[in-house]
Image 1 (cartoon, rainbow, N blue to C red):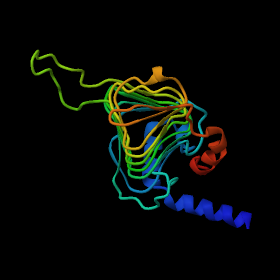
Image 2 (image 1 turned 30 degrees about the vertical axis):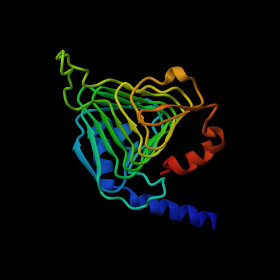
Image 3 (image 1 turned 45 degrees about the vertical axis):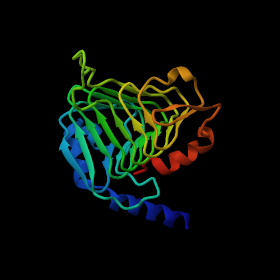
Image 4 (image 1 turned 60 degrees about the vertical axis):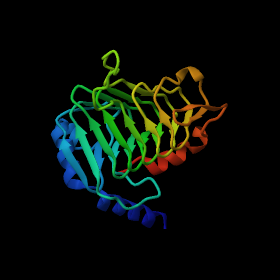
Length: 245
């Protein structure tokens, strides 16, 4: 039974991969010896608007170390809305996972760095025009957005002084970001931080210390000595998120 189960899982994985986009991306972006290992795997329908930027694999090269459109959550069906726009630099520091219908946009000269076992859940929008850093084991819940720009010039209506149009975002390690969270420019979080659903983050929270729960609009400290059981979940997360080809 174990052998049949493994065979069935391999077949499911094989037929869920978008082989056209997977082969095209790997052999376009990497030297042959790296590309043949298929480190980047795309699932389902995904639109490559522009992939002229750079992707850096800052970890031992393994098949499927970057999974885009991967099924690791409850929802099985995709809306077919996934878009991947890489004009700047994407740094991958280990296995990284992105769910269904993700919009990933990295502008020219922008840098997005994703840590070991970091992930974006389904329907997440990440828009990087400056710099976004996501720490090891940090997961972003479904329908959330990470945007480091105001998109439009904003100014003081009295003095005429312009506000910065974009500012870096830095998320610490082991952050558990719930669903429908908005992470805006200037956000910085400590390690072992939990962010409640429907929260808006827009400043530096790292001074609040580790093992905290923040939430609200805008976010504020809700509880100390509060953390996800990362050690208890570690092997389960690896089982369901790491792509084994």
